[in-house]
Image (cartoon, rainbow, N blue to C red; front, side):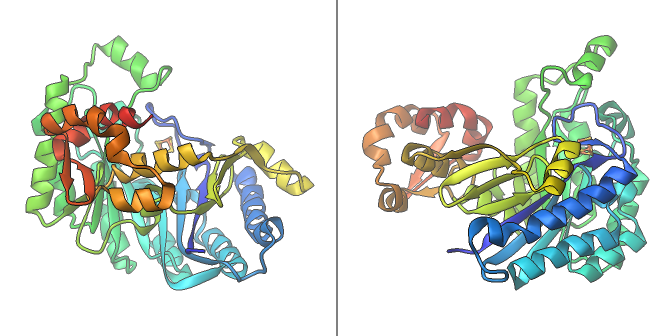
Length: 381
Ligand code: SF4
């Protein structure tokens, strides 16, 4: 069995951003304390649940996502990591990432989690323009973002990832590039560039209507993406996934499991797991999650075994998010699917349009193709 990834969902935030559609709620100190007890109990219960011996199953990545994991105390992060280490055979060189927001990524906390073994920090900066941060409902400012990066370096983090959001209301291509240049200036090892997605009832949608803010046209969004990637490449970053770039060797090992048909276990409210051909998620509401753990009740909802069709579809769809694309031969050997015979004619128009390319055995999206990835990937569904 290849090493697992472990995901720990931390569902608390200091404020709710105007665009957020994640599983999170406002910070609640007593509930957070009960959550930490519950999530450590859930982790410790994994061997019994899956019929493993404690310490028998190897894990080589751990990822604290949220929500805002930097709202935990460093001793709480240490307690959760201790639970992981007594339950799993955590590799000595495991990648251990924690997502943090700038306002709570402060010196003593960062030093504490670094000492506990966190070795990769992912900071949600989103923008270097105050007006954009305000529109998004972010509660940090640009100075806090810069301080958080400096504090992370002082605490000993040599693997830093920054998140930026593009295609924001009223944002021009030039303004977007200001943020890209600002982020490059902080010298992170990794960057994630996400395009704003507005879910139907997002408060930002209503604010945009009230204030008459608009999004730049699609052509500008394409220019934003391509210009950012060009700047990042010129600065020494390599694109390895639609939204992610890294310095050589600093790709996110945890996230690569999601894109390369890997297996992972998720702990905490709403966390997803994929193991042995099955997928499930935990109950989402934090109060219910904590109560169920305390009562020894099952946490899983929406469990299902993936069909063979779903497994190869997912291998193709996630694999094509990667810059290196997929091996057509490996897919045939693992899943028995002949992509050329089955989809060659449908893919031809995307090849002619320069969205898809074939390099020997590998099929991949071009950068232009990454902009229309959803259209291309629909071919396989
Ligand atoms: S900090 Fe992240 S998880 Fe929390 S509300 Fe903002 S976007 Fe959502």
